[in-house]
Length: 230
Image (tube, rainbow, N blue to C red):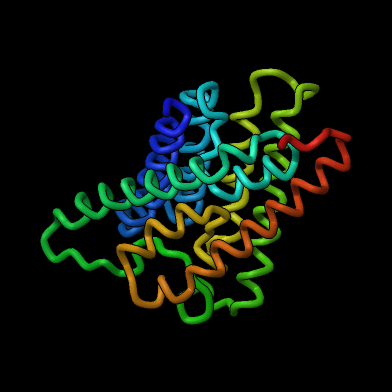
């Protein structure tokens, strides 16, 4: 339960901090944070939580990360489903807190609520093919960084920094395409509150990140020669 609670809290913080920066701060141009500020916010949430609770749960905060680590031989399959459930629930809790804060302003409109989308709901108008490729590739590279940074032969103490900066870079690349998911729990949390098209397009933000994570796990397992757990 300590591990699951850590994953719940970490994913809550990721959604509240990352999506919160988009919903609350980026909505005001005069604050000047823009896409870059939102990208940094997502990176900071993961960086801070990796150091805060990573020693308890491993600091996944993302179903795709858990699946990728399992495929790479770093995580037990017995813990996979409980982790994913805790992450999704943590994301929903973070989105609920964000909704309660955002709706406390007079004239509040839900808008896109930082949801992920493609086609008409892509920030830059990118189609489904572009969204699928982006989410697959960004998640693949995210897992390569995670698996490499947490390898026993990697420099000790720097994994959180590498992972947080990697997520920041991923957002800088892909916010215009999909609003950046690479995390099914993050996408689910926003889609539940927005409903409508966000629910209809949610499948892509489970399928593409998980596929990218699986391939990354297999590739890194081959590169490192590690054996799969369970």
